[in-house]
Length: 97
Image 1 (tube, rainbow, N blue to C red):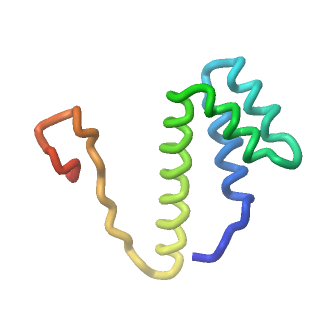
Image 2 (image 1 turned 90 degrees about the horizontal axis):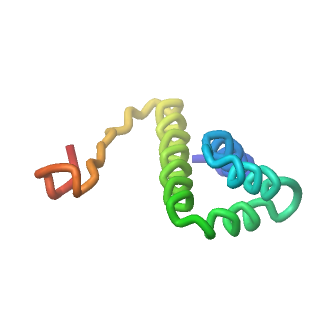
Protein backbone atom coordinates (compact mmCIF):
# COMPACT_ATOMS: atom_id res chain seq x y z
CA UNK A 1 0.00 0.00 0.00
CA UNK A 2 1.45 3.38 -0.92
CA UNK A 3 2.30 5.72 1.94
CA UNK A 4 -0.34 8.38 2.50
CA UNK A 5 1.78 10.59 4.71
CA UNK A 6 0.04 12.34 7.56
CA UNK A 7 -2.95 13.52 5.52
CA UNK A 8 -5.09 10.43 6.19
CA UNK A 9 -4.26 10.47 9.91
CA UNK A 10 -5.11 14.15 10.13
CA UNK A 11 -8.43 13.51 8.38
CA UNK A 12 -9.16 10.74 10.89
CA UNK A 13 -8.66 13.24 13.73
CA UNK A 14 -10.99 15.74 12.03
CA UNK A 15 -13.73 13.16 11.48
CA UNK A 16 -13.42 11.77 14.99
CA UNK A 17 -13.68 15.29 16.43
CA UNK A 18 -16.91 15.85 14.47
CA UNK A 19 -18.42 12.77 16.15
CA UNK A 20 -17.50 13.72 19.72
CA UNK A 21 -20.71 14.51 21.61
CA UNK A 22 -19.06 16.26 24.58
CA UNK A 23 -18.94 19.90 23.40
CA UNK A 24 -16.01 20.86 25.65
CA UNK A 25 -13.93 17.89 24.51
CA UNK A 26 -14.80 18.54 20.85
CA UNK A 27 -13.73 22.18 21.22
CA UNK A 28 -10.44 21.14 22.85
CA UNK A 29 -9.80 18.67 20.02
CA UNK A 30 -10.57 21.29 17.34
CA UNK A 31 -8.07 23.64 18.94
CA UNK A 32 -5.52 20.83 19.32
CA UNK A 33 -5.49 19.93 15.62
CA UNK A 34 -4.65 23.44 14.48
CA UNK A 35 -1.11 24.05 13.23
CA UNK A 36 2.18 22.28 13.81
CA UNK A 37 2.21 19.61 16.50
CA UNK A 38 -1.45 18.74 15.92
CA UNK A 39 -0.97 14.99 16.39
CA UNK A 40 0.78 15.38 19.75
CA UNK A 41 -1.74 17.92 21.07
CA UNK A 42 -4.67 15.79 19.89
CA UNK A 43 -3.26 12.75 21.70
CA UNK A 44 -2.54 14.82 24.81
CA UNK A 45 -6.17 16.00 24.95
CA UNK A 46 -7.49 12.46 24.50
CA UNK A 47 -5.06 11.02 27.06
CA UNK A 48 -7.08 12.79 29.75
CA UNK A 49 -10.21 10.77 28.89
CA UNK A 50 -9.63 7.01 28.74
CA UNK A 51 -13.00 6.24 27.17
CA UNK A 52 -12.48 8.75 24.34
CA UNK A 53 -8.89 7.55 23.89
CA UNK A 54 -10.16 4.00 23.34
CA UNK A 55 -12.97 5.19 21.04
CA UNK A 56 -10.48 7.15 18.93
CA UNK A 57 -8.18 4.16 18.55
CA UNK A 58 -11.07 1.93 17.45
CA UNK A 59 -12.23 4.66 15.04
CA UNK A 60 -8.72 5.21 13.63
CA UNK A 61 -8.04 1.47 13.30
CA UNK A 62 -11.29 0.91 11.39
CA UNK A 63 -10.49 3.80 9.04
CA UNK A 64 -7.03 2.34 8.41
CA UNK A 65 -8.57 -1.06 7.66
CA UNK A 66 -11.02 0.64 5.29
CA UNK A 67 -8.18 2.36 3.42
CA UNK A 68 -6.32 -0.94 3.20
CA UNK A 69 -9.41 -2.79 1.91
CA UNK A 70 -9.97 -0.05 -0.70
CA UNK A 71 -6.37 -0.25 -1.87
CA UNK A 72 -6.54 -4.05 -2.11
CA UNK A 73 -9.74 -3.80 -4.14
CA UNK A 74 -8.09 -1.29 -6.49
CA UNK A 75 -5.26 -3.78 -6.95
CA UNK A 76 -7.75 -6.52 -7.83
CA UNK A 77 -7.76 -8.38 -4.51
CA UNK A 78 -10.85 -9.33 -2.58
CA UNK A 79 -9.83 -9.21 1.09
CA UNK A 80 -11.44 -11.64 3.50
CA UNK A 81 -13.31 -9.72 6.17
CA UNK A 82 -13.32 -11.17 9.67
CA UNK A 83 -15.71 -9.80 12.24
CA UNK A 84 -14.79 -9.57 15.89
CA UNK A 85 -17.36 -10.01 18.62
CA UNK A 86 -16.57 -8.57 22.04
CA UNK A 87 -15.70 -11.47 24.40
CA UNK A 88 -18.28 -10.36 26.97
CA UNK A 89 -21.14 -10.53 24.48
CA UNK A 90 -21.67 -14.24 24.03
CA UNK A 91 -20.63 -17.81 24.03
CA UNK A 92 -18.03 -17.62 21.25
CA UNK A 93 -14.74 -17.31 23.18
CA UNK A 94 -12.63 -17.03 20.00
CA UNK A 95 -14.29 -13.76 19.05
CA UNK A 96 -14.51 -14.84 15.40
CA UNK A 97 -17.80 -15.04 13.57
